[in-house]
Image 1: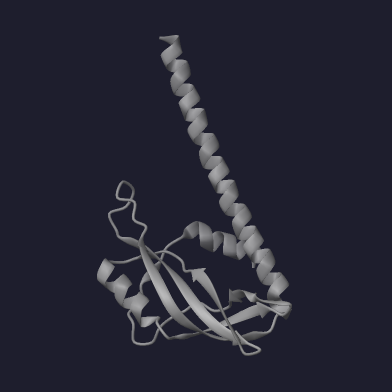
Image 2: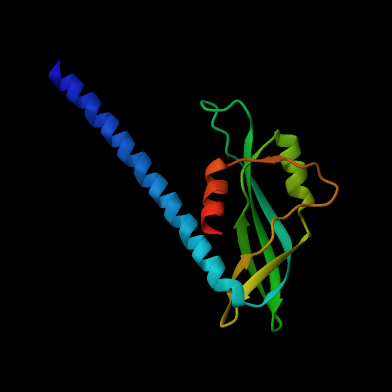
Length: 153
């Protein structure tokens, strides 16, 4: 019976360590993103056009009964007569599938503000959140993201 208890303790420790590593990875990623944003303040800015999107169901039915969606946008821009593209993943939304698809499709051909690295124009960052016109707002999700944003901005 002591072996069973020890096995459960080891399992709990393993889960806690994995969760801590995942949290550390997320924190490091947020920190590096903020560091890059600050370094990019001197980069030239321009408008880019959203050319493509991919909608992904990010719901976890065990935790939440709400639908959760993420969208990855691809955009294109032109520097010195050469076209480049970049992508950005937007924050998760809690909404139904129909509203998420309507929101995502409304983003097509919208203009967004980006900045690009002068000596490497293929490296770009988007600067403003995208909010399409004539589209119902959906609630953004992520208390941790907001807290990290407050810490690093």
